[in-house]
Length: 254
Ligand code: COA
Image (cartoon, rainbow, N blue to C red):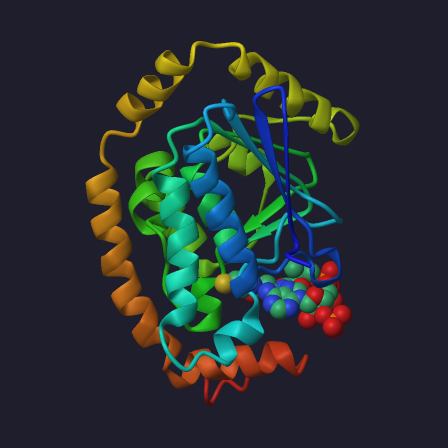
């Protein structure tokens, strides 16, 4: 089972992350499926809009930490990159429906979506420093431009969770919508977009996101440091602590 479900209806391609028992932590297979779903959509004129959502009680707990811990080469990063670049270069509007927690890449990927809606209880976190890692996929490029240096520094350096109200205040989400109406709200937004002329939508998006080369270059710069960070003792200690459900040893986490 791929843990990523797709369905196309009325011009809306819904891509659903579906690994609820592991809080939708994203595995290599799932990144591959997500990349394929976005790449296939580019080739399919029937797709006007892409909706990204998740099953279970959590949008996603981010990268599967056992994949990080088992990393022997950069193959895993290649699969994440394929997905994130497919998202970055996606010509269709992407609408995200977020609930529960959006951890790590779960928050990072929202920076590459066009419209984002969440529930009042949704929590976001960019915990990279707490795992001995660094920001990825242009979060250190887009966040300061979106939320200002101070807020970006707070979110990326402290790595504490923040709530939907803050996410809304600093431009990470378009609106916070009640739990029982979120799905209907997002569907209505997608239906509205699906009625717009495809040419106008596509070119409006490309005019809005007119710095893809700079973003792409920054992704490479971040990845160079990220790959180095993965080999540090601090990162190895953080992964092992999570997988063995124990606190980190401060002696090893420097
Ligand atoms: N990678 C691998 N497995 C994960 C995971 C991740 N990122 N996040 C959760 N899981 C697994 C847990 O190990 C647990 O598995 P088990 O049932 O076999 O023990 C299961 O999903 C449920 O998670 P649990 O931690 O018990 O749920 P919770 O509701 O108490 O907490 C989170 C939810 C998201 C706060 C917590 O799971 C968490 O902090 N996850 C790690 C997030 C993270 O650091 N991601 C990496 C970002 S770069």
